[in-house]
Image: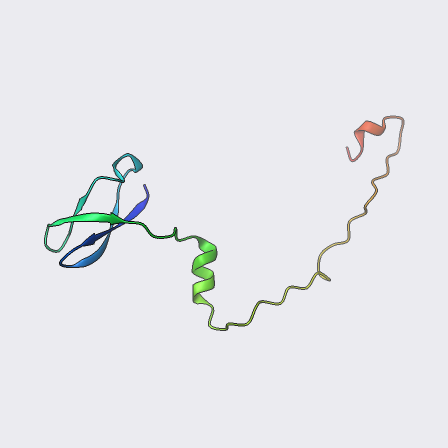
Length: 86
């Protein structure tokens, strides 16, 4: 089940786990039990949480030297050239 954010006029933002079929229905605030309306926020993905935890504003250096070298041409042995790599 997805986690949706709702806003209560009195208490502020709160989260509710609910099925997608009920995503547009209003939810009741856990503090004051008033009706809260759903607010839209960007999804929290793993890459977003990792970026948020980084302290440095410098870009990460990636080196291509560490990647394995793969041949551009595959050679076959035998009389069946359509079975390359089998």
